Image (cartoon, rainbow, N blue to C red):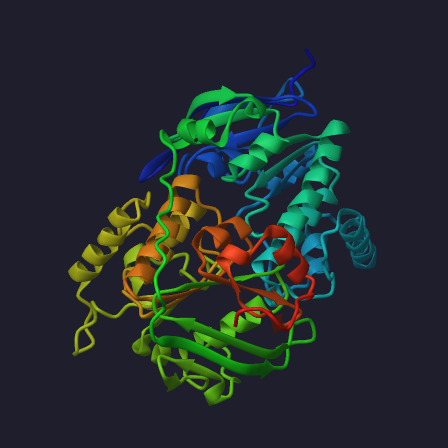
Length: 504
């Protein structure tokens, strides 16, 4: 046996409300693609941050190429040859893609050279990125590509990937896997975190399972099934979705020939987008990230106020000129794709984050009923099985999947008449994803109109009654779920759809 690339022995990390890692041991060999599997809050991301030097362990030791090391910060990790793609992006919004990448590469290379290197890597791996774009203009899928390219540019000896495909299309995932297999063949070790069990079975040669901060088992995922991996991770298989056919009701959302110029030089213009969503149905929108989904969501939520008043109708009211609060009063609730920053304020407690979209605990005098607010937050925590240190836990203290459950739960719990949700199960484990999807279907069955924008085709096939595809700022005709296939939707993602003979 060769000397292991990385050895962790009895790593422990405690926080005031939780023990994130408890005596975790792990060995990664050169050229090995090693999965770390566990439900949300199992301690996976914390362990990866310990390896990368972003978190200091309270106990335990680390060996690198057989030698004891103390990795005190990410700079020292990169010097060893460790790169990491975070689940929550570590990018500066006001800088360009190239400037963000340049920050981590030191002063030995010019910005112009970094720009050329990004373009070369993007072309080599099929991950389309414009180095000149400012990060705040990117969708989450495009930010994911930036993080992956930034890591690849360091020529790592150990590459840590935390949910790298959560907002990538199937085509982009295939390209990424080809890259990762090539890196592993060249001797690069890969630590891979994903809740997509089929990805782990396809890509990884070893799997360590964590539950409650501890290692509870290991296996060769190539010899397992999705069901057996699920049982190892959450102790059970996720329940099957109950999809009841029903006749849609009244028109809840109508978008009529919506045309909006791009917000900036790198944005996407909306070109004649028309859409209807009725009470008691789920309508899905598929597409490659960066094709106008972000612009459409801003128009629907009321954040982009350039919309002509009659271009968007919410429950029979012309709402194009209304802001988010006015639309909420009509019954429209919205889950954005960015968890931290838009969906939640990182430093505020879960209870106070409720007030971003919920006002039940605010009395007529303007005073906040703190007790009612805490009980409301606790109810969502319990209903959606959110692992957190209670209603007063800061949003930023939760794992990505648990924060996603809380944000989605906050809006579902509001009993909306119309729910617009982007990437509803981004970064959540298989059990939580099944629960969120079941809650969306229950909301639909209760008469709510639901619009889901997602890059997870499997998710859209699971819950949608009808499907659209967005490409280059245009929206395809709708397609009943029964007529939708992966190949057909894939063709439409290129903007190739037939204008006639499709159900509107």
